[in-house]
Length: 200
Image (cartoon, rainbow, N blue to C red; front, side, top):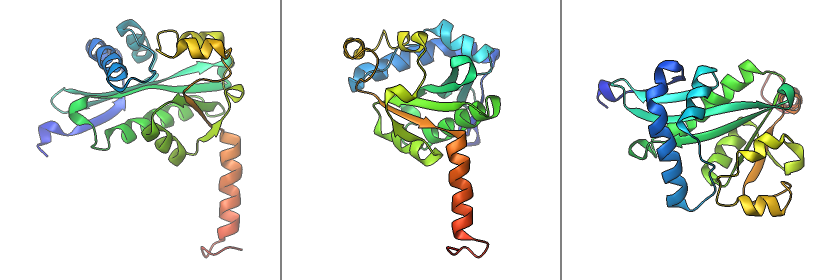
């Protein structure tokens, strides 16, 4: 690959605001193309996430936009959502989405180490990435209850379904990462494997 095309995945900042319109338009275009539910993100809301240090962006060394994602905080810091993962069509199927997902997940964990992190998606690829990071499939009752979170789904094509089920179910799959449960799992695995790598 040409050095000019090297992809950089980093925390976004206010200097990346000029990418916001492109990110917003591609998010909407992707939803229409796939016929799946993705809530719209306005350029203004995307810029806000950049300013707050809650977003991750991928760009080439020459400044071409490659991908984006962000996190939001709910329930007074009890929950964090990973949202808005989108990749420029030119750079899809190159492992970029996984790098962005990993980066925004680590950013959320560093910023809110005790928070439970959740994601709702209709995409199988996102579900697989979440599973690799330690997310588990849960019911909607186990994620944030904030009305403002569900208001973000208003622009989704499936919003009427969500409303009809009183925000207890929809076509998206809810997945949750619990730091406490993850630590228990890690300790259990280390005990079972022992220092030799065999089950104790």
